[in-house]
Image 1 (tube, rainbow, N blue to C red):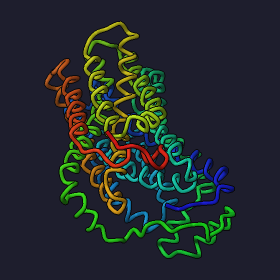
Image 2: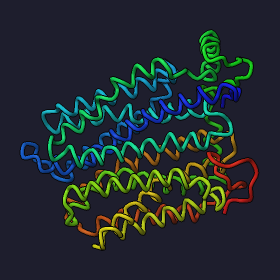
Image 3: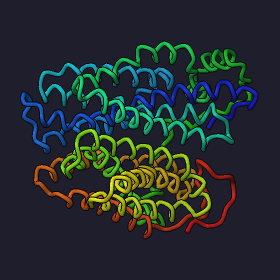
Image 4: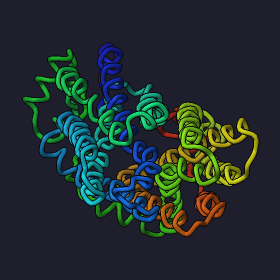
Length: 440
């Protein structure tokens, strides 16, 4: 990872973080907007959607994200990180407008799939930029603050839906997500720098010198990124080899369950609560408080994982999140229900991030990228299955069992992390400092 002089990090780092936070917020808006409009889509007399069909449409976006995350490295090699971030944000914003005018479910589903291609590539491209410019000692805060933007987007879309949906309908929600790029694209073009380390690693020294000069960064202080064309076969042999195979398979299971919950439960929460007897406004409020909990989880979990260990924290987070999902199936006083929703968001939406943190310390440094890529990739399969599963459960009129199936996914994730081996260090690489006791 590139190291930049601290004298330039404060201003440039804040700018890069702020810009990436906003585009990740827009991504969160795009992904959560579908969960807010599902009740209206199912009730639309012209579309005649069943819950299963709505679930499949929800999976189109996550399948597109899977393909987009696989292809983004090639796109980045071609046009660079800065332009890739701008292209992704512009592409999924345009597809929001496309969905706003879709005449039927088929065209709408196509729009969601195409949007997913850009959604899958944004965070893997924006994160290295933030990590480079925020500074060596601030990467933990930079990573979580940027990722908090995703759930701020979910919070914004849920709050907006409470006011907009009854008055203007579901199409207005997609227009609301499409318009901000008109302001953001000029700001990204003007203020978002390219990665100097990325340019150097790709042999584009003249461009690196230009960026370094513009931001007053001594080029000699910059280390090139790892060669993206390096042979990854050694990493594959490591993660599937003796001493790591069992852990790799268990991480696959946990990652699958984690993203099944994030995208399945997250997509269907308003409709699940509506089926439980809550009005649409109240059901959307559950999405608001769930994202408030998720934001708190992103900001507070890191220091906890530093102290308790990433493996233990991930297992407890999956388990506790599953418990609160189950509690949502019980009719309790409203304040307790909202508290359960907030705590479900706190634990479930953060457990996957802690899992990634543990992976960063479990494998040797030469295999980190390969391990994380494979484990995140398997998780993406869960993100495709989750929305479809929720639709099937609702069409089957599963009632409280819909909550219990999602809770079961959390329990399986917790068991996988509990059974996984520990690592030689417990501190979360996004938050901790060097040197710590063994992971428990």
